[in-house]
Amino acid sequence: MIELTTGIAFLVTSLYGGTAQAATVTVSTSTQSHTEQATSTDESRFMDSKTVEAYIRSQNADQPILVDIARCESTFRQFDPTGNILRGKVNKGDVGVMQINEKYHADEAARLGYNIYTVEGNVAFGRYLYNKYGSDPWSSSAPCWTDGAQLAVNK
Image 1: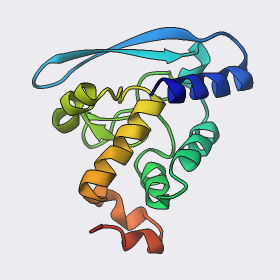
Image 2: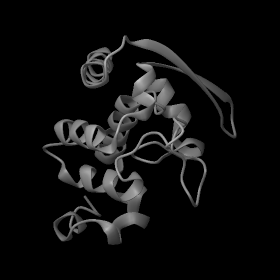
Image 3: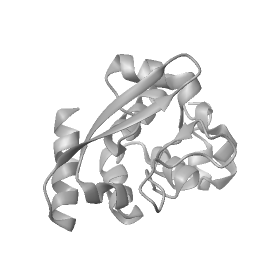
């Protein structure tokens, strides 16, 4: 996890300049309030979708369906244009690039050490969910996936 955080902070720092800093995000779920610490640069909140897409492709080269899911769920965005965490249009509890639902997954993600409010943590926990449940957590976006990815719905 630290290596991923360092890698993305380095990537963003090298693209935009600046130094890495800590950012804090507080989110309330139905069961408890989560305060998440994210290592990032100020500019990472405005990281363009091409940079996030490149990161997702590098992390999921062996599971291209996860790239398709990120494309369909968030158009490769972790944050909205104002720098706030991207939230779902239909369900505001869905967060980030992989649209991880806080109500169902925030506690488990935190317990396992994943910070779903960062690009790295959101992508890594998305992969964890995929390994555990296949593509079922994202089945509502299945019509958007490429034809080859449709076969992975019932992994």
